[in-house]
Length: 348
Image (cartoon, rainbow, N blue to C red; front, side, top):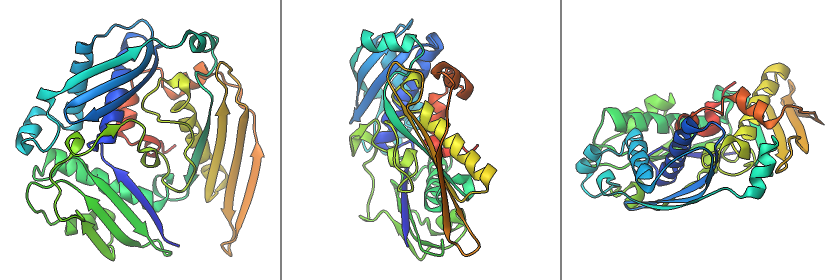
């Protein structure tokens, strides 16, 4: 059976939107660790649109949002120097305009959260498997190659751009059958040896920039919207996506909190049971602290490679505030988590 996974860099327009929202959330947490935040971001050309709700002891203006956006873009690598080098082919921070549609959080939601209940209902999935990073091999390699190209483009090889997509297909024997790369180029760069060295093997097929030319990139070439790269943030096709985007909400909404908790619990199942695969399923109810559903499903392959599955339920008694504190999500860490690539940065 062939398996394929894709990954995108922080310079991709959808991840730009995720990162800007995460960066702004961190600035609010610095002002008020109990801030309630649910803000989506859309980036098109040189316009950044904020829409959502914020409640807490925080102060900001549209001008503040613009400054934070400049800072977030600079951390991604979209500086004025980069924009000058690409001359209209990418977002230009000097020309960025902000559209602000942020209002207060609903008082109905706020009442439940103040009683130490979850800020939303939802279902959440944690997954882990044997292997590097406790991730499916095709996803691990797509991430590894993407991160290597992004670091090269950002720090050493200025012929390459930051808006990078990688895709890896492995075959039944876990060998790399196809490696696909999309990376902006100011001039032709032969990446064959770099790809082979990064993957640690030579794919049967290597495709770089399938259209033959890739120069226009970032929000100039595509509209970026938060939450559109959940398969990259989580487990590709190996497991269902649980909840919504982890990069547009504070920890009380559970989209980051319970997904990360479930991931850590799945890794523990792999370690404790010497399992091959583990799934953790959690759910939350808005305004309530208890979890309506907490179940696990674990696979162990015997010596004949036959799968033996074990499933069951468990009780989780910690309150939202306790889980948030345990995971360190009451601190300004969301931009860092987004930079590390979501669930793949949680390796137990």
